[in-house]
Amino acid sequence: MTWNVHGIFHLNPRFDVDGVCSVIRHWAPDIVALQEVDSRGRTDDPFALLAKAVGGHSVDARSIVTEDGDYGQVLLSRWPFAEPPTISDVSYQEREPRRAIAARIVSRLGDVSVIATHLGLSIHERHAQAHALADLVQPTRTLVIGDFNDWFWVKSVRGVLARICPVRTRLRTFPSRLPMMRLDRIYASRDLTIRSAWTDRKACAYSDHLPVIADVAFAD
Image 1 (cartoon, helix red, strand yellow):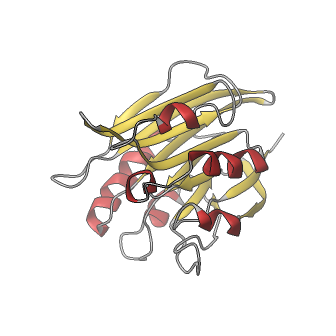
Image 2 (image 1 turned 135 degrees about the vertical axis):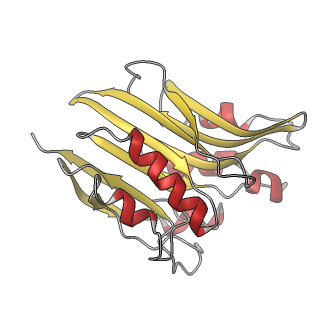
């Protein structure tokens, strides 16, 4: 599962973290990537609260750190990490800091590599970041998940990642109340199969992005 929760922790003072957690728990995914987690201006810690939504294994990448709180993304897993995940800086020039979390997860069917990210808003920025992601991709059993902000064909993220992760979701996720753009995706290496993929329209109560949930199968 991947979901941009839109930072409304900051924009909406009445935002209920339990609401996001309830959507996650409803689908009970094994792996979840969340983007735009924002603890700035809050008395609680959304990073810590969300870490408990799936299981006991989580890592966060805080791309903006301030005295008033932090902003970034988290990767949650029901299964343990084979080794400590790595966080790569995929920022582009003077634009907003961006990170990619790379983790190898020990599932009950064997290891799977997961790269979780949130890419930038400009075409050249995303194109450079897509190549940085491609360098992190393992040849087999790899998922690249997140908000790619990718809606143009010119220098598209899809064009870069499809060479190594040709399996992908194609669901419209933004804006959540009338989704038109396929910003949030799950990419998979060619030895994986996406059996089914869907969104949850109830999630529009908590974000202007819909989550993408997918059932992924190993070839063997």
